[in-house]
Image 1: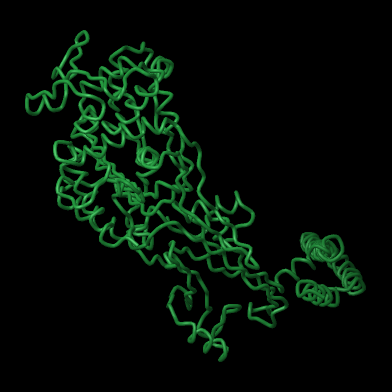
Image 2 (image 1 turned 30 degrees about the vertical axis):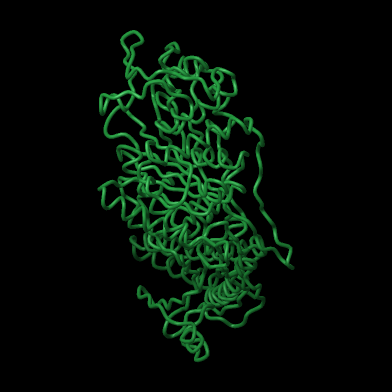
Length: 588
């Protein structure tokens, strides 16, 4: 019998005994005789009689209400109340699971989970060790299942990031499950941690695991009587990345030091294997601490944006490689075609000038495509864009992945933009002019790209194939049934090998004396590179630098962008130089 039913019966029986029908009837008859006798003697006795009748009538009504309520609770709602009483006696308790570990390509742990133990007594919370937790439970002073004399123990999962800030955007971070998480995914428990940003978010379903559950019988005071069932938690699956932890850490150190020196705040850098598409390192600045994200929540510089995949910028002169290939593939020019650098020219009221003329009032004279790439000559590419036309340039850009997601396994990747007549008409209610095509030819105007798209272009030029960039190489499964995730070649032979070799030669000369990549003029190794200085309406231009190395056997492609940094070769170039120096000294 439930406690509620038991106490209701006792109360009803006592009340019925104290006010039985016979007693009420006998008492009423005596009162009637008494009041009748008094009425002949006292004219005011009628009022007392009415009050007595009302009082007894009220007692009877109250009695009937109690009996009716008791009938409702025990008969009509009896089944439901028995269930509620049983639920109050039996408690289902969830306890957290460990998320899967994240490893780099060499098996170094980048993220892992450990349990922490908290002793809570009223409003006081104290972190204790696992040994202290067991000792308190053995002495029945505190437990995970009930509150003891010293309080109750709560087990939580704490995520640790071995590379700290240096891998923040790459790995992401975790938080406790929120109401939206619980509503949108029935598999998530209130004690679970949910991945936010980076690999933690993209592979949350694998890393998540399942929480443990206990069925506990408790007494009226909420103390444990016994454990009726216990389902152990299932830890999440381990994930292996293509990332080189040492390279990741070094790239972060180089970029951080450079930004501090140049007093700039926002930048991004990414390194890939051009043959496979494997991402070896990825940095976005400003950074946040994945172990204490609260400190960065109100940062106006938006540290939670992963600029490698979410930052969209005019690609500047790096896009000249696309224009060059469009011109060669369409037959607009050949390797030997020459265009004269006249310094500047006008179309209507718009002035088109070369950077060399603007800075030094110098001209490059007659130059071919190789020299134009090495010198990043704007006049050459203006005229080439005019000859080649918008459609051929757009098609080549799309072949190399611009204006679309690369498919990298990171959340919220941006598309970028490859503009055309319809887009401009829709966006600005304006026609497309020749000047728009010329600006597109040098990666300016309306053109937008992400750093991962730019680096994919460089990787494709280096390897001759267009691959999907990816970060996770393997997910550990049960019973050694691992999930292998390899690279994917999206397209091969996008352009002819002959034309690719022409582009590569121009990139090699760009990093040699006489080119624009002056930070590499004295390097002891040979690379292919392209500088970019992306002008914008206000402020300093964005500084770009992209390269692949070694030149004859490409193993890495690297792209650096520094927002509002200025000239690409002078600002972003030194970052790439310092990184590649380290790479050639430490490569395996």
